Image (cartoon, rainbow, N blue to C red; front, side, top):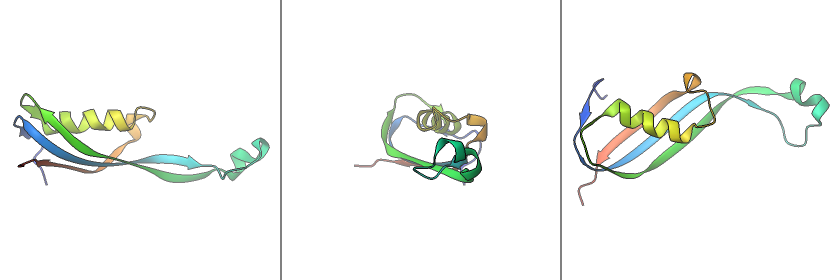
Length: 92
């Protein structure tokens, strides 16, 4: 488990992010007059992964929050829970 406030050194990194947030599911083809009564509370899940180059020292939380904002631009960030954020230095 990473230490809160951990500073990440410049370099190339792989990242793997998973976030969850409350969501509402409405079955497809539900007539508009039944949308509210057919709505079901659920958990939305989004993933992001890839590589990036870090050019300056930065806090792990700052990096994580950057990717969370990108993947959840249409979700209230107060409702988002980060369930996975892995940073791995690229060695090759």
